[in-house]
Image 1 (cartoon, one colour):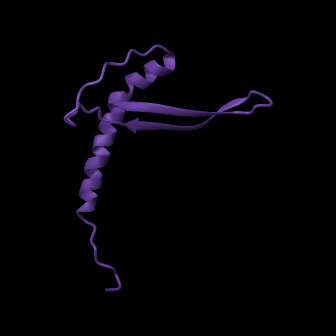
Image 2: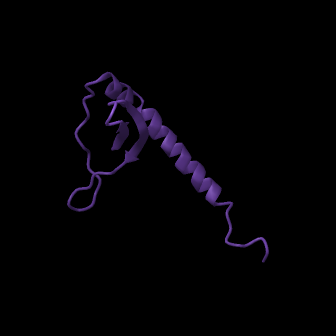
Image 3: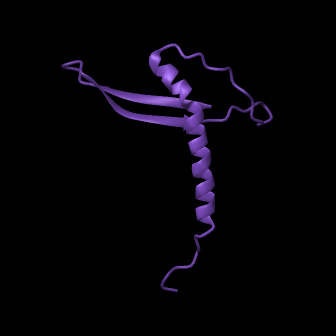
Length: 84
C-alpha cells in the first residue's frame, strides 16, 4: 500500500500555512503468518485524494522500473578499491 504524507508548517502568529515536505511511503500488510494480504480499497473523497488515487499506478510502475535499474547497476559495482 502507498501512503502519502504531507507536512504543513504554520506560522502561529499569522496562521499562514505552507507545505514543508511531502513523501510517498510504501508498506506491505502481513497476516499472522507474515504473508502479504490485501487491504481495503481506498475511496478518495477530495479532489487532492482523487488525483493521488488516479496517479498511484504510474508511481508504482516508476518504483518498479527504478528497482530494476538499481539491480542492473549493482551488477557493475565492485568491492575493489581503485588504489589496490
